[in-house]
Image 1 (tube, each protein chain N blue to C red):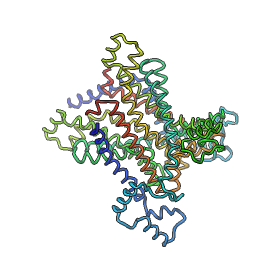
Image 2: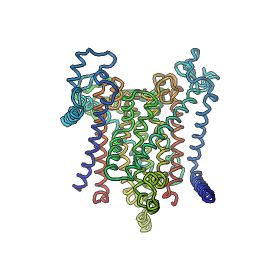
Image 3: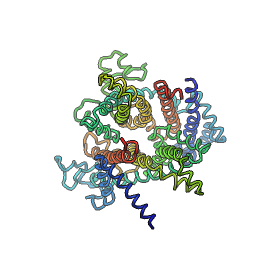
Image 4: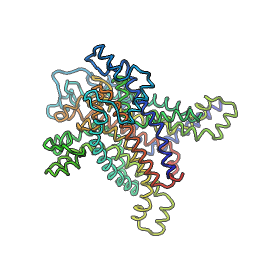
Length: 335
Length: 297
């Protein structure tokens, strides 16, 4: 098991180096002088230019700059945002809970709806239920989610008036010492109506973000289940006279879920990309919207840090999924 | 002479077998029909569109579709905020989306095949370097990486296409490499090698044709991904720039009117959905028809 763990970690090292090179190279690849680019259209005096070049270290050899960049990363220094002057890491960590909350609820919805949908479709293969649910899954899989979000806003916020258009909670509520997780904060504050407000704000964005993972999980569950149902041990279980519920629920489902768990893990990257679009549509104050804002503000340190941190999150989650996979599936662990 | 006839009849048999399996999947056939219709619409856009996609009609701002009160018969699907005919913009938008799909898949396919062939054929450190670089690209959320690349290259359709192609390309490289590694030591490759085939011939003429099936399926999936991602970039203001009638860009321009004029938002998105859905249906059909494992069951 320890060898398995170490192997996984060792595998990450070259990827991590690659990610830092990409993030480091990003500002260098911008055509022109980075200091002038960051100054934007306002321009900059020659003295200030020289001062900034020295301060930011652009006058030194590129490999020195790179090693210093990586060294700083290990000390938690991701540079400072150009627009707020605050450390990029602080900004990221302030906004990250909003994205985690949205992403967790989305993946929860996707799993709780997707797996049963796929499993039942497989059991009732060829039925109307199978065809309708898999048709719906294909539509979900093909969905431009930014449009889907706008449609839901038109219908539920515009016509029915059930849900708010944007934000995380009504402006009435404010939690100065909150954790950043609105569901938890609103519940802990004990203010009446706060939790309901948070839920009402969360519901549309999480449905939008859940759409594609849900479709992928449903399709994957169905095909995994179909494969398992044709295995010998399932036939043996049936032949032994076990109830269909035991055969499907215990023998087949447990084995079918193994590849599905990997699929769920792989959706984290999809969720991150989806968060960029979802948060933009719903003005959700998370890292997706922050990245878009940073790009349009030409706040390059923020973009660089955000790119690095988001890739890091995806990498760590994939590692956890890998390890989990090893725990669930002994065949992998002992290989 | 007889050899070529034999070869063509063999190709014909394979094609008819392929069509047999493909046409069994009703969804795939429907998808193919919709896709063909889109191609026709894109080619004959100037003939089919009732108006120019960029001309602004000052006396017709935000006109609703014809069946709604206030609609005008000359603007079937209504007009946008500056009085452009939505139907015409959608028709011309089909061109953008198909070109995006074709360009992106071509770049990604060629890049991926060449890298995958080299990695799989030579192995060793060449393989390690190429595949680690692919891992790095895959470590980033694809849309995010494409976005940042466009931020570097500057917003615009061409840069968006390049960025999306780079992001999608590792999938092709991985598939090709895996296929080459399983084919490399098979007897027919040995035979060709013994017969004196050069490296390039071995790579492209002997091995590659036998790895095509998964690449074709991946190519279709990437086509729909490209259309979706390009629309997303357009929506975020980093893809095609206004007044280009690109569907994602149209949605971005329509955002502020969503609660007043549902049609400016609904139709471009519907066009994206229908296109992507049609291509994915074809992709599913291709996978079923080309995957020998599924064929047997």
